[in-house]
Image (cartoon, rainbow, N blue to C red; front, side):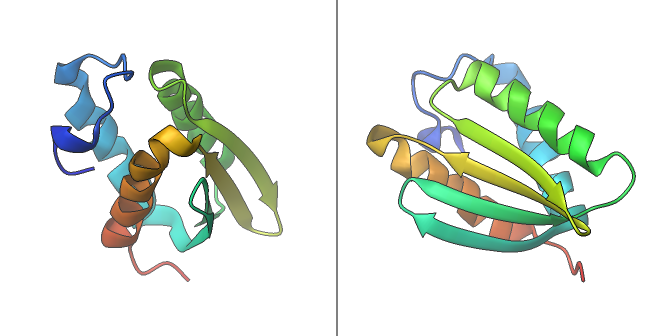
Length: 112
């Protein structure tokens, strides 16, 4: 998620807004990400530390992301101090999902 080369043509988020969206993901990952699990080439599970309004924040970001990149299917669940974000894509967008997972791992903070 570092440059425009990973963004598929089907993304409708205006180019000028993309760095802001990436920054939102980066901040979330740095503040809350505990674990990234690649369940399959088409599904990644991101486990985040819960806290005040974290579930709402994750849900809002996931909804806005799927609004401009309709190939994403996000599921947000909260349980026992963890907010889980499952991100799924079809076969044509596996590279985008891999870029998201790699970005998450690269920006993950020291969350216990």
